[in-house]
Image 1 (cartoon, rainbow, N blue to C red):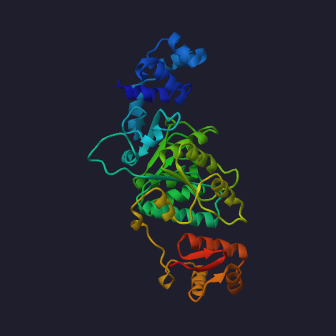
Image 2: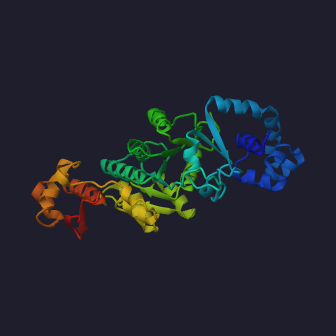
Image 3: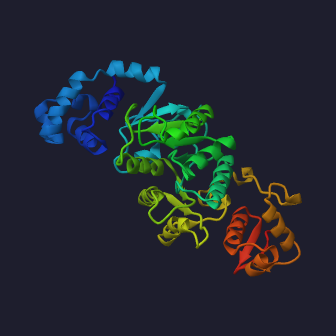
Length: 375
């Protein structure tokens, strides 16, 4: 059996996570030696209780049978010891022992790795897009916009396949013909939530990947989601929060991003919305305020900005009725927010959302409440 296979075996033992595993490697020198270690030596590292449980586990766990099971389920894996293991993820504290992968392994390999392979395409840049499960129409629009435009610029979109922002980011990427990676807090063979079964299949069919540090068959737990969030941030060059409340789980991912030295981005929303709280809090903590996808590409030094599609205002193509009306008003002169609301008889909250979206799309400019067409 190879060293890889012993990594795989340890990832299935509930008493050993990344912290204890690192201690075992340091003490024994290899996963194989740790697997075959004496109980007395194991007790020194993981304690008497876990050592006793491990003795039973290793007698019952058949590595060869497990490998056959993975093959039947079309589940691949990448170990921390492999050169193909994503370099950015390796750099975080306590990286996963093993990444289980369902789908296109090359999508994972295309992330920055330490492998040297002249036949491999240029390394891909990944951006995590996360946010609230209870998304608003504003959040939906900006998430779709950023995911599709960034994937058009060849970035890989990473998220957690949850309701709301996560699911929309994955779907928008697929619709744009891009690649996306979903990180689960449970086994990669278990679509979660169940209602996202089709999205799960679409990710696989589109050449994306589903990954997890949890062994196949393991259900989600309360503690598995923060662990999942650290992987999302660890895999990515940057983290974007499009919408979320003050207690949003997306803040956990963003805070991991800040801790890991990643670029963290936040899209400001209407100040009247409680779901603008997470982005605003992050901006206060030093996250980069972004209002269009090009802001992220510039910050990540992506030179493929020309690939990002532009929203045309010629003939009103692709515009909503309200956006077309506002474009019509601003073609003659700049107008203040209050005047736009008065002329179109719009609710001020709705008008604020529409104008924010138009600004993000690059259609208009805002100077102290005075709006004009973007040049």
